[in-house]
Amino acid sequence: TAYANGGAHAYLKAKQIPIGLAKTGVKYCHHKAMEFDIGIYFEANGHGTVMVKDHVIDRLQKLETAVDDPKKKAAVSQILAAYQLINQAVGDALSDLLFVEVLLLQQNWTIQHWNAIYSDLPSRQTKVQIADRALVKTTDDETACLAPEALKDAVDALVAAAGPRARAFVRPSGTEDAVRVYAEAQTEAAANDLALRVAQAVHAHAAGVGDAPTAFVA
Image (tube, rainbow, N blue to C red; front, top):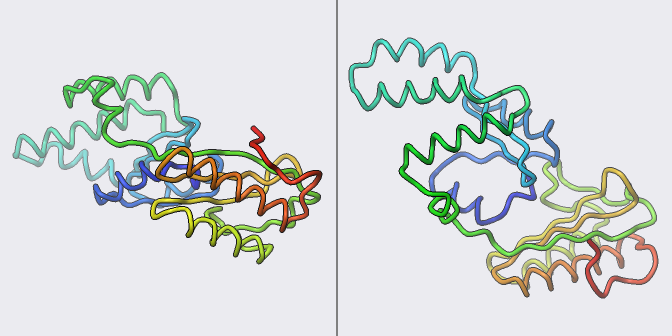
């Protein structure tokens, strides 16, 4: 989703792993993952799973007995074992935990090694109360604002001025008349500043309620 940290995105891109973007929410991630033969999705809050298409499993089961190369045979067996362990329907914390333990053992990694494979960019989230959340429109994947046009232009300008790895987006809340703001940048100070400036732009261009924000709202 748009909430996935830019550090993770850059890491996966460097590994040449195809990346899909979905609207915020497990059901949207699930549908997006189903577009791939092997789909992996985990939201920033931890919800997610790994999905493998039936035709892939059928092919792998045939390969497991047909392949002679030991390395290839082991790779096929490992994917089939992962398929049996992971709950594809909705995700399962216990099976995911066991899967992680297996991967760490296989790589001979500690938790510290795993944590160090990439670094998250500093990020900040906040929200702004507005008169009507229907005023704010975004792209389907919520990475860009479409309306109001003045807000779109303001967010684009603020991101451009915040540095080469800066990113920000706004999205209407699904539960209240408010706009959620997310910002990230190369430093914590820059991310905080960008989030506040975007929040102020939301208040100015999307009928903000009350005083304009001068500090963060959780």
